[in-house]
Length: 360
Ligand code: NAD
Ligand code: GLY
Image 1 (spheres, protein in one colour):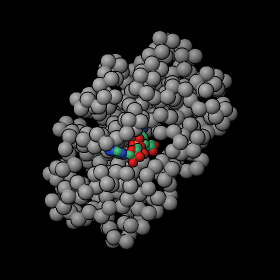
Image 2 (cartoon, helix red, strand yellow):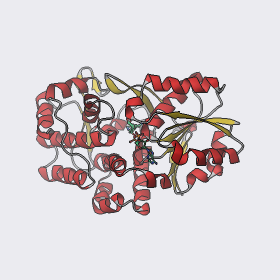
Image 3 (tube, helix red, strand yellow):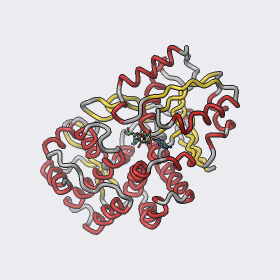
C-alpha cells in the first residue's frame, strides 16, 4: 500500500492506494468511528463490491446501510440526491453518521454533496472504484450534481476524511471506462508534469493491458499531482483551475450531447485536443507538441475529434461554465507539454476556429 497526504491543516487526510484495501478494517474503522455508516453506491457496483465493504465495516463493529442509486451521469440530479436524503432520514442517521461513497465519480460527487449538506455536514469517506475516480474525482473535495443547463452547476467543496483506492476493483472496469480515466491521467502530465507525460507515452500499452504495476504508478503519480494542487489552492482561486484542462470544451460536449451520451473522460479528451489546437493557433505550442498530444490520446483509444454541435452552440454552452468571469471565457491552455496556463486572452474568433478545426 502507498499513502499520500492531502495537506489541509486540521482537515488533512490520507489517500491510500493498493490492492486488497476494501478488506482492511484497520484502515476504515478508525476513520468511521461510529456505530453505523451509510454506503452510497450504484446498481452496477453494489453486486461487485458492496458485500465486501459491509463485511469489513462489520468487523469494526459498524452497521452499514446501503443506498443503491441508478447508474449513470444522467442520474446525477436533484431527484437522485433526494433519494439519498430520504434514506438518511428514514434510517435516523445523525451528524456523526459517516457517508461512504463506493463507486465512480458520479457516485462520489453525489454522495459527497449529500455528506456536505445533510444536517449541515457529516463525515465523508471516498472508496473510488473507477480509474477516473482513483486518479481525480475522489481527491480534492469537489462535489456536485448536474443541472440541465450545465454540468456540476450545483455543489460544494467538501473534503473526505479518507480516500481508499483499492486497485483490485479496476479488474472489473470495462475497457472504455479505463480509457476514459486515462484522459485525466494524461491531463496531469500536460498541465504540470512533463516527465509523467513522457512516462505515459512509454507505458501506454502496459496501462491499457492493466499491468498492476503501471496502473499503481499512474494512480500514485496522478494523486500526488492532484494533492499538491489542492493543498496549494483548495477552492480554485488560482492554480487549481489548471485541473480543468479540456473541461470547458468537454462540459459543453457532455451537456450538448445530453449527459451520459459521451463519457466524461472522453469529452475531456476531445476537449483537451481543442485546447491544444487553440494553443497551437495562438503560437503557444508548436505543431509537434499538438501532434504528440493527439497521438497519445489516439493510442489510448480516446476521441480526438469533437462532435459537431456548431460553434455557436459550443460558445453558448461554454458561457454557462463556471470558468466564465466578467463575461470573459477563462480557458486552460498550454505553453508547452507540462506547462498549463490560465488565460482569458484567446479571442472568441480563435476559439471558434479551434472548435471548427476539431469537429467532425
Ligand atoms: P461513473 O461514476 O459513471 O463510472 C463509470 C461506470 O463504471 C459506471 O457505469 C459505473 O457504475 C461503473 N463502475 C464503477 N466502478 C466499477 C468497477 N470497479 N467495475 C465495473 N464497473 C464499475 O464515471 P467516472 O468516470 O468514474 O466519473 C465521472 C464523473 O466524475 C463525472 O460526473 C465527472 O463530472 C466527475 N468528476 C468529478 C471530479 C471531481 O473533482 N469531483 C473530477 C473528475 C470527474
Ligand atoms: N477535477 C478538477 C478539480 O478537482 O479541481
